[in-house]
Length: 116
Image (cartoon, rainbow, N blue to C red):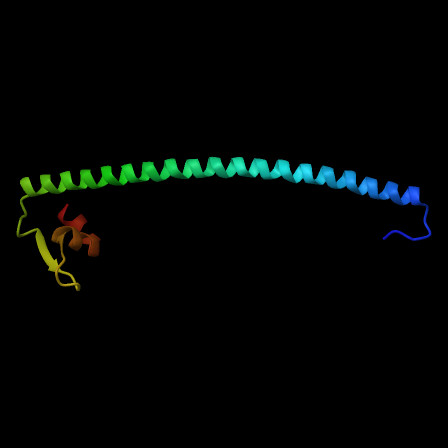
């Protein structure tokens, strides 16, 4: 890097400039690290708040679901045998119901115009 035959003052001057450049580079990277540390702290704080809010919303969702289930048990809707049929799913234990008339109208739209 430094020629042995070069002027010692110019070699020292080159080393000094490199040293000052490295000080500036270190300060720049230190400042960048500080900014990134603050960003990480902010992100972690935001993440914790979001997780807390998520837990509260999930709890609210579950409580409202339980209330709806209680209401459904207390006030079951009357089911007309002519329009509702239960179908056992392939899973076996689950059942689904559907409106027979709506299925017929969806499959045969011309009947809706003929009857309407």
